[in-house]
Length: 101
Image (cartoon, rainbow, N blue to C red):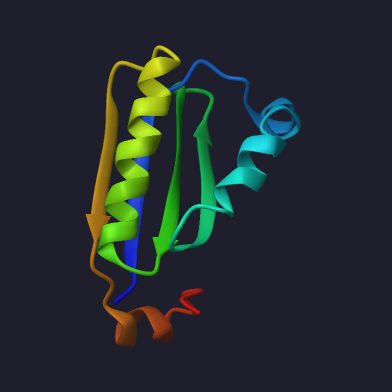
């Protein structure tokens, strides 16, 4: 069963176009993560937060990615990573045009 992973953390930037240009290689590498279906990148320059919302094939893939990503961020100096794995209510999500497939 597909699982949604939400991750956010303190992030000093870059944001916007500079973030897009600087993190292209990272974005491409995420496509190769086991079980990853898609990611929506999130950013809030005003509150200095970064993160993402991911759809994984299963909970094991979501948890493995969260562990790896948290370690990567902490190695870059991020002190607190918040990651939550959610079940998806597919019937209601489909009504609201969720990109589940």
